[in-house]
Length: 241
Image 1 (spheres, one colour):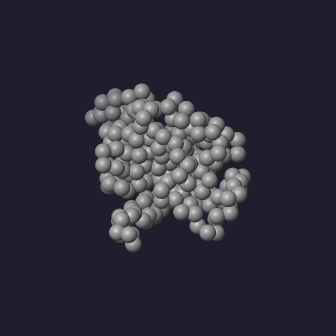
Image 2 (cartoon, one colour):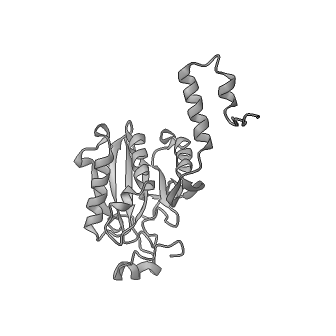
Image 3 (tube, helix red, strand yellow):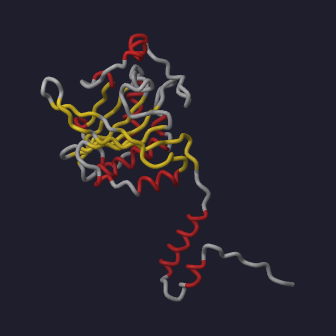
């Protein structure tokens, strides 16, 4: 009787190098080949990456103001593999002063006055540039892994997370829709502080919460004024909202 064939597709590199590779190298090769054959692990939500390249403008009263030039980067993130592909190819060190990077749920934009964000707010963590990239990765993983979403009060939603470069620090933000829910505000902070390794944890005076409407540059579009005056429901967060 003929023996059944052993299919080794994708493992030829390992079989050809067993005489020259060490056992540790062989294990690494096998692991890489195994990961290549894994099916994508889908994320619960789809995510988009935005890049904000702010430009300086002169206001009528001769004050310097910055305008947002927001652009979407790459394709939609739909799996854990998609996330790591983006994260590994977007080095924070290449982001320049006053530029920002955002990872937001599909359908949301990192703009305070967007109709889905206008009644929301965000936590801001000021971290040294030396630890900023690691802190940023942890916060993004909390977002796509749904831990931040689970920390919110009922009826609230996570919008996304962002990183902005300043002179000697990174500002890492976590946005949600309903700033009136104190349980959400407390829950997000507790989630981050519980996950961040001790060596990355910022001092209490280096993080704060703020409603979007409390920022000096916040301007309500006339067509959305009724949302600010009368409140906004968060249950309309489907892609068509």
